[in-house]
Length: 336
Image (cartoon, rainbow, N blue to C red; front, side, top):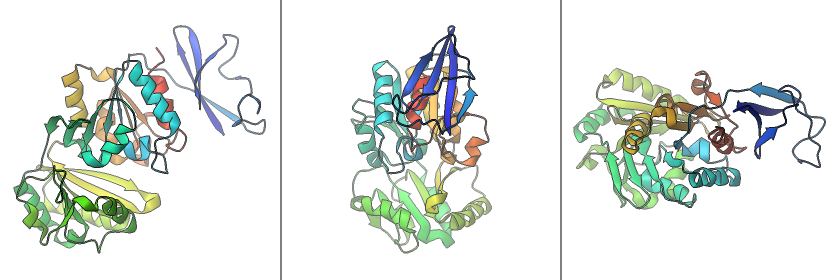
């Protein structure tokens, strides 16, 4: 079933299709869009039914567009689809600032950002670091090493699931005791970052400087237990706990950062620095760790593959990451 979105602005009606916005003739009813033949677009056939959904357009000008990376900008093959790439380049050329906001470390997110082909800033490690592609740092929000030391002590039963990250680009940027308790999905990520990994046991011995964050990762069931242990540790007023889940891969990650640190706080700080009102900010995300960013943005958009927590918020829903959902969301910024 194809889902067409219709928008009205300045007396004109637009229809959002997989390849962009198409102006609709005044005589065409919202509910009687003419069928397209196979010859005019190969994705459509007469056997398919059309579901029409009327959505109000954004009425304010978008000046800052913030996009998550994994599950949002990257498709299921962990690539940027050509449609999403073209849409972001078009938005940049039109004067809209693009910022990528991710749970990845800056270095691990850098190759993705460089594919866009223009200069931009990265908010990485779930808001802990804001840095340009050239390496200029705008802000860091590190976890005090004393707090992290206490955290590791409280999470003794999850030492094999514990990863510490530090803001450096050498061996020791990622620290863990061993790989034995990590599932296949997270092990593949660690193997790609092996040049930065140092094994330290006990892991507390690595806390000679303040870390960016602590991360607990493993199966969904195992991380439910970890969340329960974190609640029992009673550290809520000194840390921020963020969750990212990929049920299809049975992978869950719990990021523990300094108190008040999140994608949302970092995006709000950057928008203020650049002089943007929240009504001029669009954010696109798909997972639990995107909630604060979406709450801040005046124009939150969630992916068609978003988790249930986000879908229950009543935010606008674009297509999934397998069908250029970012491109479809970007088109909304051009309806004015």
